[in-house]
Every structure is written in C-alpha cells, then in structure tokens.
Length: 176
Image (cartoon, rainbow, N blue to C red):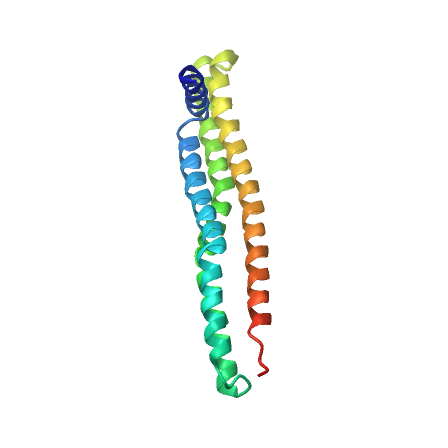
C-alpha cells in the first residue's frame, strides 16, 4: 500500500513538472473550484432543506396569504432563499472561465521555451524542444479538462437550484 502511494505521488509530481509552473496554478484553481462546488452540493442537501422547512412553516402560520403585503413577503422569502442558494455560483462560474485562459498561458510559456531552445541550438535538437512542447500542451489540456468538468458541474448545480426554487414557489401557495 505504501509503495503504491509513493508510485502514485511520483507519477503525479512527474506530470506536474512536465507541465511547468502554470500547471500548479491550474491545479490550485481546480482544487478551489471543486471545493466550492462540493460546498454548494453540501449546502443544497443539508442546510437548504432546513431553511425551506422553516420558511414553509412561517408561511403556513400566516393567516393572510392573498393581500399585496403577503405577496411581497412571499417574494422576499423566495428571494432570500434564492440568494443563499446561488451565493457563490458567480465565483464558481468565473473560475470555470479562467481555466482555459490559464491553459492558454501555459501554452504561451511552453512555446516561449521551445523558441528559446530553437534559438540556442539552431532548431536541430528535437529532444531539447520536447520539454517546451510538453509545457505547452499539458497545461492546455488541463485547462480544457478543468473548464469542461466545471461546465458540467455548474450546469448540474444550476438545474438543481432552479428545481428547488420552483418547488419552493409551488409550496408557498397564495391561497388560504
């Protein structure tokens, strides 16, 4: 077990070295992004359901549910839950957008290294250029994988949040 973990960590660190410094930035960004996604999922399945139950209890305890004031209170309740539910989604979406941009930055820095090696060796040493090519392609791939997985995660979260808000609106009936 110990040797398997050591082999895995060696493989990961070797991959990260081939990708260069930008790959570490992308990995950190992905860690932050998916931590935030996990937090939203956790909130959705734990705290959110309790808040909805409390809001429904407050709403159902009301005697007046049809007046203009009651409608405004209903809208305020829905808005408060919506704000809490969608709290960090703009930041998560921004991190998704940044992923391919960092991948592009890795491409540029890797290609600069390739051109530097070409200038030193006259372009005849393909083995020396291979390190720069890997520093150009690995961050690009990582940025795209991070962006695509982030798009799937945010779309799933948006769908779940929209559905939860629709259910809340349906449960906060306006009739007595």
